[in-house]
Image (cartoon, rainbow, N blue to C red; front, top):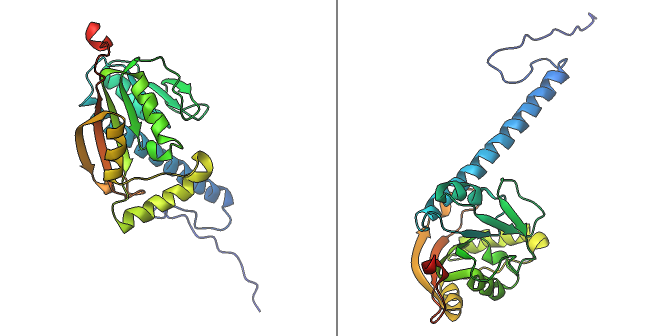
Length: 237
């Protein structure tokens, strides 16, 4: 019987991977390249989504306003918004650090590390359903907001069986890190916000497909805080 011989297959420029089993180094390099490209694409999407949200928020917050981003996560919304408003947006979260170069402060999930009446706007972008005491967090928002200030809220709303399923998956992913999530429908959010003397200035329905990896019904709310008889620090400047 004739001895079998290995016949090398020439590398084709049309194939993105090595065609010979004798090229493990090239194959490893190809896999490593794919991983790097995927990580780069994920970062682009993350930064891009943050930019789009910052652009929306910048339309309702005046330039030069002092802003607090609660639960800022990677910090890219605060980073973009700082450039758009021409000011330094402070970001706070429970993690030890954040990715973006922002003014970052760590907090315990309830008490904000800021003085009373110290900011013109507070952002809560998909944060409140993670709060273990939503009322306490919103009371902290009232404390740090100047009279007439704005609170901008983005939230997932379990409006249908599909949305409830997506929220259930989200809770399974996060409950070990931040505790169980507490999702509310529109009427429950309204009742809670009104009980804390927030006035809903504007409300928008958002497409569930703005994030294909988390397709859920969403709302954005702009709330105004008016405390009768409270000195308006913003107007005095």
